[in-house]
Image (cartoon, rainbow, N blue to C red):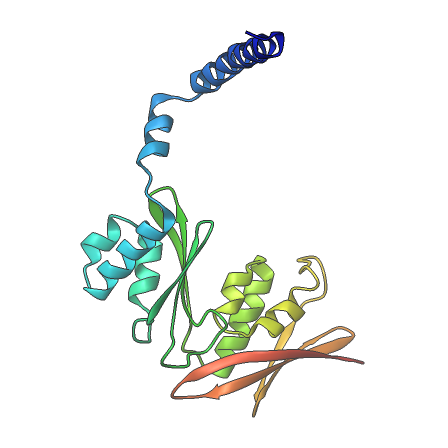
Length: 214
């Protein structure tokens, strides 16, 4: 046997003896329930599809087994027909989208937020009046929740309003109503205009935002 081979074996054995204590220490810090939960939790896509299938069957009992009550209530209030396609998951965020109909909002269907073995939040496209869509977007900005904004607005409009973080101690925004395709908000020093598109039958969405200075 060569000296090089013996040196390689010795190095591998040394690495193994260094790794085992580290693994043991990590395992010791995890409680048995935590280990079991990690092993038992299904993939987010599996959980999201189970909720979608339960909703499709109008089975609230089955839905409640894979989602928190708020998520179940939101999904079962969805005003449009079921989306046509599962669009996959990014981390714990799973989407179902429409391909045969156009609905308001950039979500284009459903967004399920999965944590562990439960869907903890559901975002949906909304069927709202122009004024309600404008208020929904402003509320999303206040909450710092882009997904909520995408329920009623296009990506460009959400990007524009979220360029600046809302300051609860800043100037208040006062709703001035909607005139044709524009819903306006006034504030000290200017105004924000939300340009909307849609119809009473289909619902409205905010497509873009512009600002006016006094």
